[in-house]
Length: 234
Image 1 (tube, one colour):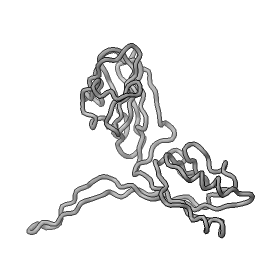
Image 2 (image 1 turned 45 degrees about the horizontal axis):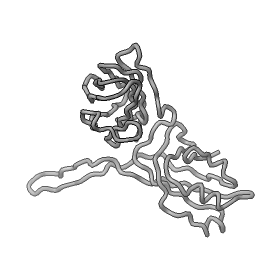
Image 3 (image 1 turned 120 degrees about the vertical axis):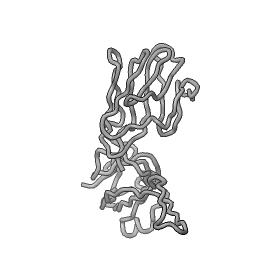
Image 4 (image 1 turned 60 degrees about the horizontal axis):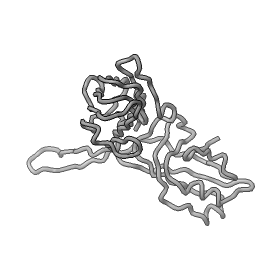
């Protein structure tokens, strides 16, 4: 049976909702800028990053359905898992309204998910490793493209953090057992729910997990390191 999971709720729990067909599994397009220069053979192609794209799913109604519950279910954004890719989730928005007339008359309609280009692991979305008694921890990016994870570092005082042999950050001012969060996508640091960029010295853009094993080392007192959204595919 086809189904989807929106923000943790399975579509089979919605009264009378049937997923008739799932979106096909495709890759996002690379955005490019192409320049022609007089006197030069060919052109210059500049890669601008992967584009967000749409994935369309066909739904139907059956039995003693509740159309209001169905519409409410799709009136949200966040994370979606499709049953043909249960180990991955997409970040999505739904901008197009459901054709209510078609849904009621023919008991079927299309749902268009506007998905961001990358998909993430629904299995090891968040992994926490103890640092006590060690001088390094390893995280495995099982995806097929680099990721920009969110790190949760619990420690004391001041210390440095390195990734794959290159120093990333110097972190200062942590009290005993305090956790600082460094977000590689947002390029910000947080502590106790507030911005903590003054506690971090380094280049956020270098927080990048390659595919395969990524080794984090440190100097100073670090008790625990966790990584979130560190497995990524296109």
